Image 1 (cartoon, helix red, strand yellow):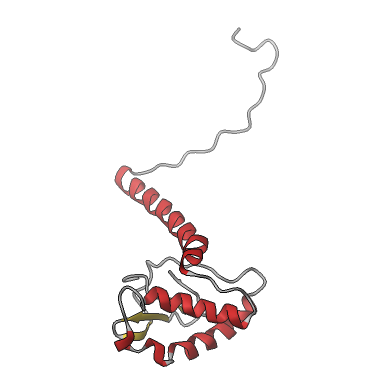
Image 2 (tube, rainbow, N blue to C red; image 1 turned 45 degrees about the vertical axis):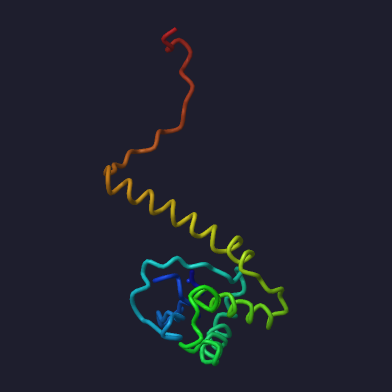
Length: 153
């Protein structure tokens, strides 16, 4: 899961835009990693035309991540975890924009499942190509009708 900041061990991330920083919430609290997240699935949340808000989201993410709610001793694997961190941040941003908050089920259904399905298809394709190889053929040209008198019937 990822939210691009200006997006795995158990999908605990908010991914940085330009700096490549990934914000993770784990048993160690909020971490900021610059590497190791290349296999992550990014879930875009901004609608086209709203990319000007990314810088504002960057500030919200930094402020949000430094609150006491995300200290290491508060981490609970089942209830106060990476998913809670991401969803709570998203809902904070939505609230500042006057938008309706998402619950876990809505967020999962609307954002997470479609992306993981797409990623699963690419992974399956990659594995099949890796196992069976591949080749490239030219697509067939446009179908033309046979000229009168040249048919086989």
